[in-house]
Length: 412
Image (tube, rainbow, N blue to C red):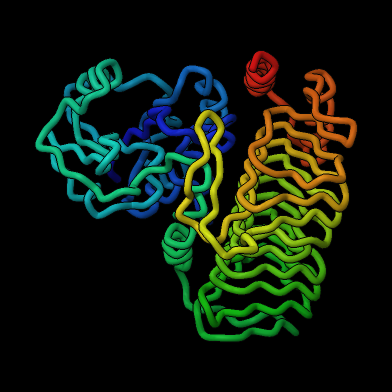
């Protein structure tokens, strides 16, 4: 395996995707960016470089050695190896395993055309330190990758979604198409992968005409559910009765979903347990969408969606179909509506009759009486209660990060 160092350069306006995780830990398809790059290229991460405020939570996320790694220790965080031997560095905002990365030689760097941001390079750790301080690639010659090659806005997870998911399903489909479980209806000839510990109940429909389906370890597909490929169902995820999972959807680990879901990526540990439509959206961790929560993913004019990334102004997204980008720990009441291109920031609580639209503040507490800040102690109490339902205990590092995010929201 090739040793690699992933780095989060902090560029772009990616909140809420990267509020609580490094850019390479964002689920950009069935897999996170880091897992996709490693699987596609046979990479073994030896170090992860992240902004200081994410160092402790990144260390916790990667506390164990990676499966299949040739090393007995997990990757270090913000501790570059003390060696003069060139290493491969990959920007965590690069979701696709580009051929141009694989072809880099020592002393070569790959930039994104237009922005000039570093996509990848093979260089000595000391040269990377110089790059961090000076912001310029210290190696040459320099090649360019056509834009977009890097995530720079939250809606880019939808821009890259189909290509990333196609790659992931090909990587994860490592065996011949399996026989269908008893009383399960299969349609089409694309590959089907069902992990040995997954449970697919009678009455499920698996539509493979448009692409493959991967159902991971310990996942549960309840009676009456329909899954249309290409689709990915993560470990311990539950697809509830009569759910309709439409094409280009990736349900992350420990999520529980129902209703109609189309072209959605769910990071992990989030719930949409009732009826309602969710389309062309990205959902973070520890989100709970109340019964009947529905989003719009298409303008009445059929035009290009305009959206506003936190910290930036209104921009054209290049997308006709764009639903909502929903940050971690967001909660919606029953019957909530999310408008086209909404950016719902971390920690929001929405119990209002008006539709949620535009870009909401972090830790917004929104009711018909108005919007105020979600009191931090109450927020933490709610977050801990939800996490305990999955037998996850909030760590001190995670609590400190949430407190910092809450404090910055209060000051803005």
